[in-house]
Amino acid sequence: MGLRFRKSVRLCKGVRLNFSNSGVSATIGGRGASVNVGKRGVYQNFSIPGTGISYRTKLAGGSSAPRNAQRAVSSGGVASPRIPAAVRQWQEYTGRENPSASFSVDEYGEILFHDECGNLITDQCLISIISKTPAFRERKAELQRLRQNAGAATVEQDRERMRGVLDVYKSSPVVSDRSVFESRLVGLSPKEYELLPFSEAAPDLGQLQYEVSREADAAISTLAFWKRRRMKNEYFNSHIEQRYYERKQAWEYRKNKFEREQIERKRQLDRRYYDEYLAEKRKVERALSGDSSYIEDEVAHWFEACVLPLSIDAQYEYRGDCRTLLVDLDLPEIEDLPQEKLVQLKSGIVKSKAKTQKELRNEYVQCVFGFCVLVLTSLLSISPAINSMVLSAYTQRPDKNGDIVDDYIVSMRVPRDRMCGLRVADFDPKVLCLGFEARCKMTQTGIFKTIVPFDA
Image 1 (cartoon, rainbow, N blue to C red):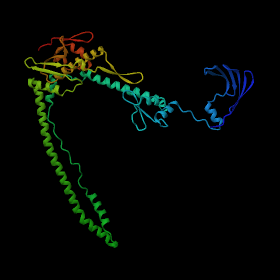
Image 2 (image 1 turned 90 degrees about the horizontal axis):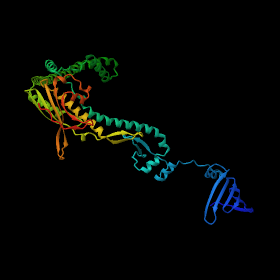
Image 3 (image 1 turned 135 degrees about the horizontal axis):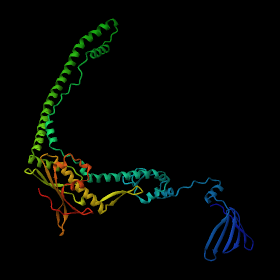
């Protein structure tokens, strides 16, 4: 402990002179209220005698340097730099001297904190401390830009998935008339496999002569230089003919083998191509003739192979006497639609928000008519013999007794000539469907009422 010195001398009533290691000061006043004047400035003191309660305030003067810095300078030392509060909190919380963390942004715009080993930090108290460090503040603007971009991309992906449901009709084929099928039949012909040429070049005699000559140079080593030329010529003449014959024989063997394989491959593929040609020719002929079994098989195949964002089912029948295809389409329910959507807040964070009933009903209307258009165009494209189509769509809903029943909500008669050549992607599916002879009762708020469907 250092030596301390303090002494007070009373000059007169109410005035004292104070001596200490830090210098000389004067106190004017008595108990309860006084003024102290010294090199640190002028201070006014108030107290309530006997209670221990006092109040001290600075009036003027003195050095503005921090007390600890003054002490360090007065003792001949150098003032230590100020440690930010967040760094001190890190040191106290983790027991480590320097804050070490990295930052990233996830797809929902949330800032992720990682320790020096790359592990995710989930301690909210520690995250709060890191958020106040200089390193985080330096990257804050960049992280904000990243979270805005990441959040916007996530919201757009969510909207794109929803567009896949609402715009399903835009993948509808263009319905062709009979002349297109007839032209396809005339243009059919079996493919033929083209033989590939053998790509390996025949042995080069000149190249072989060079190789054997180099071999002779390496093989003949004699001090009798007058014999060297004769010996090299003998070596060359004894090897060149046999070597060329062997190489030519090996090349011809590979060439003949390749050509035999090509002929066999052509025979197999030409047969397969011809079978495919016959199958396609038979398919177009059956489509032109309106073969009932063919049409119903193709309808079944389409429903089995079709990949849709929401599942549908159907019952169907082709009536050849009136050339009408009847389809009862089991639609998705409104509950099958996504009930929430992603929205981006001003901060960049993405949150899930429940859709309003109005939004859900509008989306369901678009979904119902979009699926109807896709089914109409796809099935009418099977055969030009289908002169008309009756499409009725139903959904499952509870009745008055709470039992789940099939409720028909849309039914339409569609003549083929009204659909031929039509690019349905350019139309509103609801307007397109209701433009035919249709039965549909729908409120202004998008609620479908039960209807009686068309018969053939």
